[in-house]
Image (tube, rainbow, N blue to C red; front, top):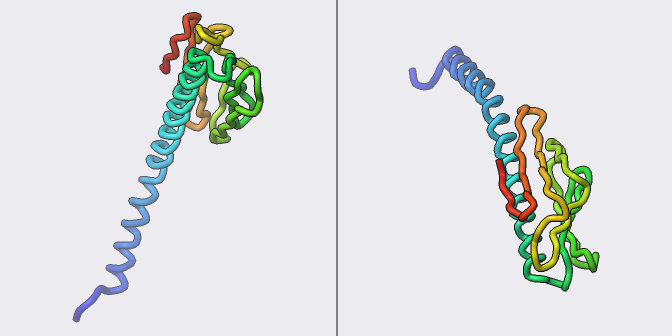
Length: 139
């Protein structure tokens, strides 16, 4: 006889279902971790972008970032036409001052601050700090 018996087929399917059920939580954890990391990297990059724009005096303006639930906005202090809105995953929480401004020409922040990205599902957080001199670090 050629082929597989029904019993062999059921056994193979049971093994595949078992492997899939064991790997799903690992995949979910990996996905959540990568989501948190990529959001932190993007936010750090955007902070450096607006600091650079302030240093360069683009639009003869200071540049800043404004946080609201589910999104943040990069803005020129003098003209809302240059606003850029970025959405982030609703699975993440960002705790920070509502608004941070980098001074034109010096690039120094209006106030030293810490921005915390939290993934409650992983009980993990990433902190982005900006010191008084404008140094941006991700921890």
